[in-house]
Length: 139
Image (tube, rainbow, N blue to C red; front, side, top):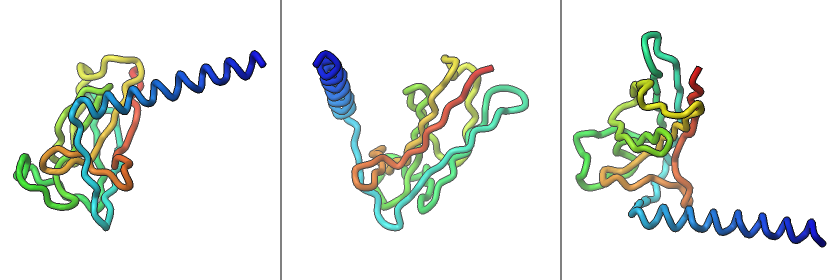
């Protein structure tokens, strides 16, 4: 009985933390837009720079970077990317970005890239973000 009580306590804490995270996302005004077929996809490749920091390559399919259309009307499956380094957002207008060591504040740094429309809405497929996630481990 005691084990069951602990299990239910842990399960309820997980449920409420997940619910709080979803509410937090919506309270910050994050907008989403369903991508159209053929659905875009994104992957990332992170390589250590020979001088300093890391180079990030964003590998997208069925998506077009159009920095000249930022803040203009949306057109399906085009826009820009958002790069989150430990949650801090940067806009990306092409497939390459240099991450300086100054941007990396943790021993393990989460790198998240999302595809976004011209109005900054995050593209989703069936309500799931089109994203790629990686980690940079500092030496």
